[in-house]
Length: 379
Image (tube, rainbow, N blue to C red):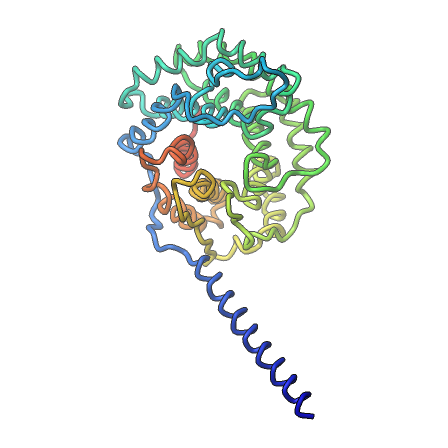
């Protein structure tokens, strides 16, 4: 009897200790999800902020090293320098960051023609996006082991750059658009070939996220009136997402996310569905967004010199542009602007020149979020 009583007491003690540890873990977890108190005021892209953000890609679009090639090696001939392999987009650490660094400079020049260092920016854009350089870029994409290179994140940003050039009323833009066109056509064909074979969407919070890749490509298709591409994306998005409900946004973000799987999905569906159809879909997919008191904790960055952990600044900017998109189009969701502002205001001051792990790409995310906040029309 004494032995049995002892065992019962021991089990109760262990259970009590486990419960206390579990409650403590829950409490600690909830602390990490607290919303940092930052300004909820609307953020505007001033000329001074534009100059600050332009300095980031201006510094790196012709900075070859450090560099991450993301390359599959077929033979010793493939072992070449970044600039030899990608003479247009060799800077800013990796190919896709270089592409959206060029996009950043173009969109800022469009909005602020007298931007600081505008002559240098124009010169570097012309040097990089030359006819010869783009021809070499195309050779890389046509390589035996490069068919899926930058699919679809880099593809999406290339089409966003092409769209930005197309809507820029400037002689330089016509030159650059013409030079870039063969690569643009190749990327469009890449979507046409790939999407029918993709049976399931990729729902991660990093580069391969399908919803993000569809969104920028759809913007390009609508702006350039590429009906075939637009229809393909609409059908693909409906196949992937139309029946989705109750997206677990409270699971976000994952440790390295720079995209929100839930909000990126809402961002593409907002584009392809009619207004009433989208509101019905959104109510099933993210019903909590309709709550006027809806809050969403910002992604917390513990070390901005860590190239992966600093991704969470990106998730703050990308969440913001998705929330702005909904709020700008649907007045009943106007309260989401405050949540978006808080996300931008948490991360924007931390994009500083001495943090290359973030500065080689985060400026583009900040600019796109600020453009969306202002509902910038780039026609």
